[in-house]
Amino acid sequence: MPTVSPRRRRRAPQRRAEATKTRLLDAATKAFARSGFEGASTLALERAAKVERGLLVYHFRSRKGLWRAVIDRLADRVGQSMQRIFSAAGRKDDTVNAVVRALVVANAETPEFMRIMVIESRRGSALADYAIEHHIRRFVAALEGALGHAVSVHDYYILMGACSFFFLSPREAQRVWSADPTSERFLSQQTEAVAELMRTRWSARKEPIVVPLRARA
Image (cartoon, rainbow, N blue to C red):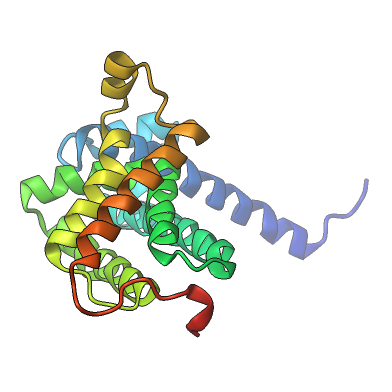
């Protein structure tokens, strides 16, 4: 019989552990986006992930630990989407369009982040505070860095609402306008509409708004 190396024997349990964690994260993402933290029990999450009883606590210490891991993973995906668009737009002069496009695409690719945030923010939970301190502040800073000026609370919610709400309630667009919010055509049209709105809003200010991405480090 072939001999199995010690390293290979160690890797097998590691792979199983990572697969278990991924199943728990995937199942919890769906559950928290649908029902919120309070609507997803530990037992229900383990059953949805098809893992043995007790493995949620083993890997994440608690249901709250799993929630934080879910929101961290989603926030990383949102940040990566935004950075990818910023980088791709680095050769263009229209920064407002690039910022809006980044937000639209990020929400299209990771709608669960906003769904979970809406639920927990409405509850006013400590979980929402965790996400705000660890991720929302970082997103605002990224937007301000890309735009080259401060983003007010009104600017932020106009942007986030216009760039995310149709992913929270896609059935409305489908039933009322026969529009597919996931199509490239829709994403491009929404980007142009929101960018035009923000340019109009910001053009009334005295400071310059559109700063080429290529002009910044």
